[in-house]
Length: 139
Image (cartoon, rainbow, N blue to C red; front, side, top):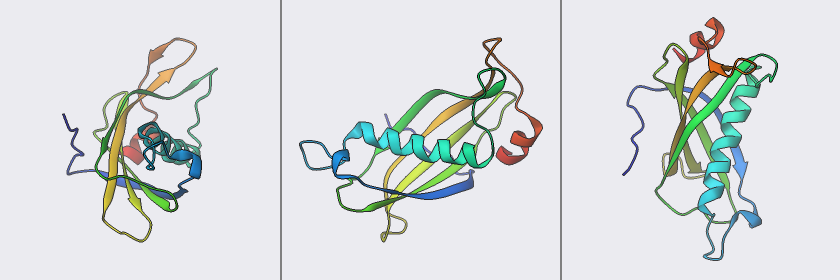
């Protein structure tokens, strides 16, 4: 089953991630678990750029599911252009979507993935309404 990225999504962040020699597996391409690491790196960098890092004594974002569609094999050496999008804002959550391209091959998507992000009150252990400043970003 392939998860589809929504037609209506908002580009919020881009970054370049170098492919490391150690990212490859015995088959000579980037291991499937590393794609999830790339998705995590861009998502965490985006949240950090907003000052939205989780605060264990307060509130912040939590990933409650994640997916990745592997479309082409990435291989060392090279750099990955990660594009981060948001969509589907709800009362307590929003979706993030990320495409991975090789630098120098614009528009050729090697993988696409995403996650459902929920805003949580950590001490209470429950979801809470998105802060207005975050809602403005993801709307």
